[in-house]
Length: 322
Image (cartoon, rainbow, N blue to C red; front, side, top):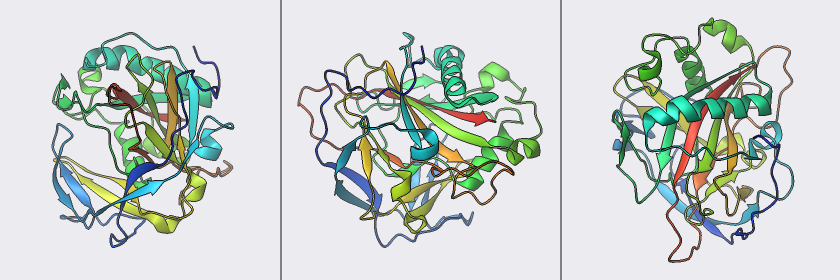
């Protein structure tokens, strides 16, 4: 059950030393808004399995960064874009798409709704990540992806707006909700009304292994430490749509948080876009602005024992409507 913010380190946890993360290089043009042309200045063409088949304008720059223990001091979605919660592990087969959608999605909805007080929460997508299980089928055309070793934010204002509108339409062929809902939209509400009020994209991220995470743990970049000038729009060209997210270039003031030794009875809530955030151009009327619009994140390359088990994690994407 939900037990509020969780800050005590598990017994097996130890503070990480320096880590390596992959930023975009200094020659990659920064930008706040996409141009929607092909090929994009910075972006990829992605197939239905979620694999990148063409890459454009991407120049990676590995950087060694210092890590701050994210368990030290309270973290909130409004202020920090991330919150660690204790949450009972659900013993299901996470490599079975149907079990995840029918059993785990509702638990993530409950968790986000109880924590944020949202009037409505929709879970609409997820990824499983593991090096050893990469390429394993998990249902439909979906496969296990490796941990994403690139500093990124999942949404921009434009792609978040598009996703909200998508929730009022029938699921597309490659949507995880399609087998469950058929032609019924996930949300039977007016999209313009939804967009006029506060909404927040949140990832629920957790380990699905019994051992604490040692290999490629997730790092969170403090939203307050990233100026607008460090943002880079990354376009994702699918067969049926164009998505976009944010990459970043390195900044000397960037502050990285890690949550060492995360266990599967812990869930990390990561804010991926908030239209009440200070970066949003179209905030809802009458809603106070909050410091964190979204939180950049990335898998971290950190020292680990040779016998340390591979990371196996799941992230479920949700939208909270207020």
